[in-house]
Image 1: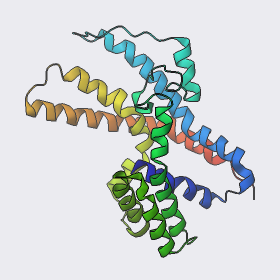
Image 2 (image 1 turned 90 degrees about the vertical axis):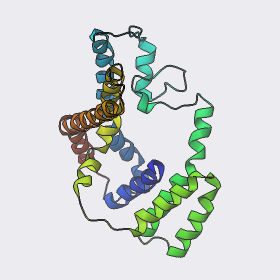
Image 3 (image 1 turned 120 degrees about the vertical axis):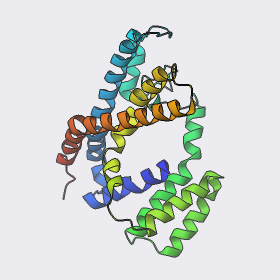
Image 4 (image 1 turned 90 degrees about the horizontal axis):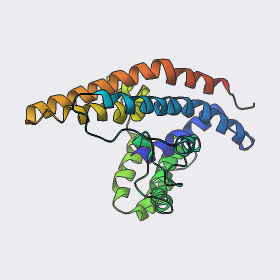
Length: 236
């Protein structure tokens, strides 16, 4: 679903903003302004949390240790390629190079499914072409079933605005913070929560704390990045 949504929203936003072939440099600047400040902020947050949690009673893990090479690799998203650990594991790939690249290539068909959904929704291709293209993405294997269903849902299902829209607005912040915040709560609370009820309560606290943290982070970090990105316009 993630790759299908990405395949839809990236060309859709370019289409709505009037992107032209010569605007690639501005596109990169807009993406850097939109994504990197929140990303770097979460790296700093993870770095601080890794030292703070060592102060918790009963902490049994190894003390944090990072090298400047490991920290510098985050600037260009190179950690998986140079075999250095990520501070925020939501950014990591489960396979090292070249297996990481192969894994990304395996998801290209479902990314294309999102692009096809955009083209159909924008009226650039017919419904018949959409269905034929989606059928071709079946080469992705079992994940294609979810990918095709997601693409069809994006294209043909209209949903009214709801409270879920608010979660969508902070989804990038929530994606970046759910492990550094929610994961830390689960790790610390898991030492004393053993019954089903206690574990369910702990999970609820972790989810709630992640959403609250994401809302605050969105307000003070992500929204300014969005405004900075929006100020970089494509040429008429």
